Image (cartoon, rainbow, N blue to C red; front, side, top):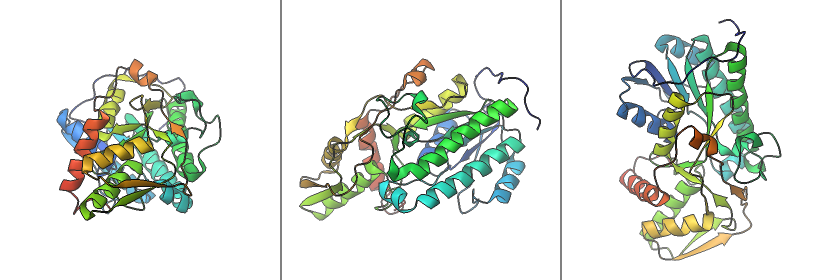
Length: 327
């Protein structure tokens, strides 16, 4: 592939429903939602490999697979992810694994002339004390949250990778930064999950065991925004068909709640009527992380699944799959 001499010239339009569409991370929370969305929308050749079938950290294997399937479209939803405990304990793993996954998949996509790529990051890329709600131009304007800085740096590198491809090769690749996601196929592990699935598991187990109390980390005062994975999948397809530009696009609901409020809501959904205690010796993380979603709204998309409805559906899914879920 030769370097581009001009800026990206691309007019977003409906994607070819018969073209090969590779979803990297197709079994995860976001990837599985994207696969469901694509199939619902009539895509006939949606492909993916499990981590057991294809280790995305294996560069040679990734290049061989991409050369074999020759996708026209690609969503990079694969990543090593975790909550505060996992990120704080294994920063080397979160940095190294994610950098290798991103580099391998994006380089292989470039080598195989993949037309349209969407790289999915995380709202943790923004400074810990960014002005709220967080605009896209807040990137690299301040210090990161120390408990997940390694993961954030890897995701920032992914954004720069997309921008570099646009500048050097003129390809219409884009980046989307979701807020806190939840839904079917989430990680409910006690040590590796994010806050919402961790709370669902904790309160559900307490309700079933008849426990008198549940103890959560921190003070419960930080504010978080939550987006259902099916909404995220809908937004990704919308962006691929309606947006093109070098700047990452925030994907969220535009509203947030405190951790204490979400804990109380989950307790009610699962039927836990005991006491909630807070271990204030444990870290809170970023005090608030609410995304400015005006760029996304300007592109014609807003969230559709309410938090109440999304929680009901997620708890029901968790209980139906409790014997087979991750964790």
